Length: 135
Image (tube, rainbow, N blue to C red; front, side, top):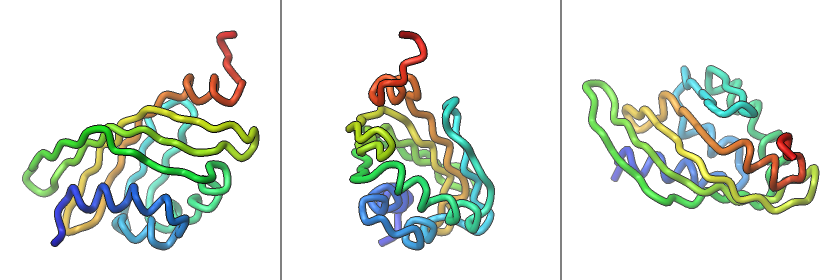
């Protein structure tokens, strides 16, 4: 059975299987991908998002999103799902194992993600790959 929480968690789980088509299949045609972290870059549209996924997957291998907490809120036209996560991966450029905390806010309607707002700790990432700008 479809639930907004199943959509959000299914989307995150799909990253472990490394199939860009499966991941992009969770998002709506007019999907808006917004990043609030300095190192992130957003985009609009399923096709553009799908085009970017192979680069993300090549940069972060053995990736996994671990859900730490999840909250669902009903709105008039959408359901909002907020996921606190831990992202684990190997950063391919440095071969460093990373573990980054973050939060994603999903707007979901009719079984598809309309918008994803992602906030993650980019300073922790830089420190873990040995590129700490404050050192």
